[in-house]
Length: 289
Image (cartoon, rainbow, N blue to C red):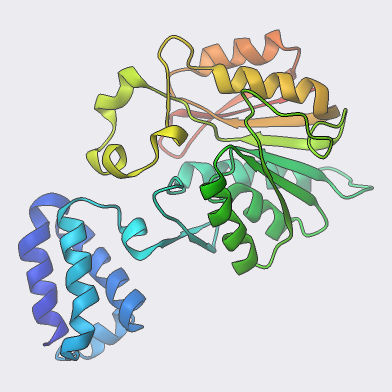
């Protein structure tokens, strides 16, 4: 069957859900992933035909897209900060806003003189995208990554191997931490970073169905009555385990910027700075111990 005929089927079945341009993008990703055929090849040879056996995964992906499964889960991979990452239903799909968090940390580090290797911990690492991206860019740093989910850590370890970085992975619950001398060492870290769950249940109506139906709620949602519980726990952790003059970085709920400023100041952090993301929403906050 010619690929242009399959593309026509994709548009017929999916345009009402995603729109023409998004369907084109999905089709190109699927064809490159399963057949190794890049978009330019389709442009150069629009009559290109594939074998019957090669059609199966293309149509299986179409069926999954009709159910609004995220393309990243269908393919089992995505890209973050220029690096490849495996993802599955145990891990969040990394967002562009989180790339901005990584970029801010790297920009801050570039402006200081480093005498000894930086020690960094990423709390709630998920797929490992933050920790691995930092380790890739800061090759002298000692990077750790903590998560409560063993299944997520399994994915993160694969991603570290795939991107050839050395990360210390730790299974622990920041809300009910088990004492671990590798993790809980006074004044140990130069940087603590976290993108914890922060979407309140009352905001679920704002979330698209493909996120609600397929991404792990454990990594997304918090109770309305205590939306900052992870931030409070991580601030407490930072008071004990962040070096003096070390920096704490968070990705945050766009509606809770003022509350986060107050929280970090109440914990004694200095030079607390709130930053907006590419969409103009309050998204990143940092403070110095």
